[in-house]
Length: 124
Image (cartoon, rainbow, N blue to C red; front, side, top):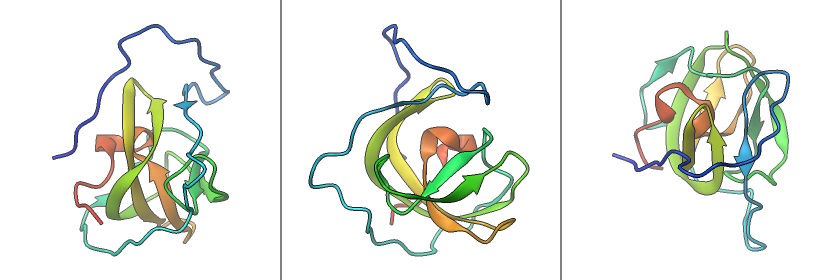
């Protein structure tokens, strides 16, 4: 089971048109957007909990976006790993799930705070 924490201190946030507040920390200079993953989780479903969720090339907020996940999209979780801190929907997580958006065919990394049930439960 992964650990996560909620924000316990007041933080000033800017909320976009989706109504989701995201607080991120810059990736360390050594962060890489290439990370090993494999399809070992069997969880499927409609699991984005916001609209216009970045699907990234790596588990860091500085990694490029490959596309956007939407509330109505179906996804296939593969596995999770540690990455940048992201806060959204009342959760702060340091884990990211590699997934395939079955609706668009885009595969990549999404911060677990932006996924229902906080993403995959299987480590990469």
